[in-house]
Length: 138
Image 1 (cartoon, rainbow, N blue to C red):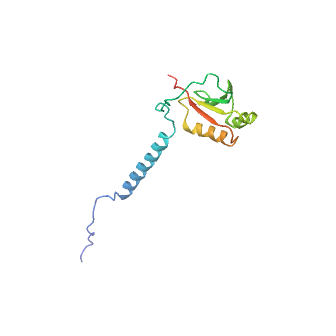
Image 2: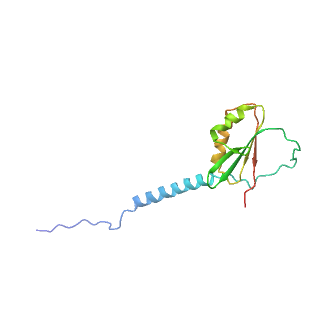
């Protein structure tokens, strides 16, 4: 009687699942790196207009300054008074004919600026919005 012989096989491990996982990890890190790079606005390289002039007596406006504080995070200020993002439309609604000026610290993430734009967006179609970038603190 003849004994059982194992069929000839390839003894190397199947690497297909591992290659699939590696490709998924590569795609994941590419997407995450792309999202992280979009998070902050690049304010250093903004061009300055050739005909830019400093206005001596600026017209009054609804001015918001957004500062990046280590303790509080990104906080909008109405003058010297800190406010919540939900209060921005209420401040503009007091006098919607005034233009709205937003000044942002150079370290403020772009996502926070989008929150401010959304808050300003529905307040008044007549109000013009002026965006200024403050210098980065050293």
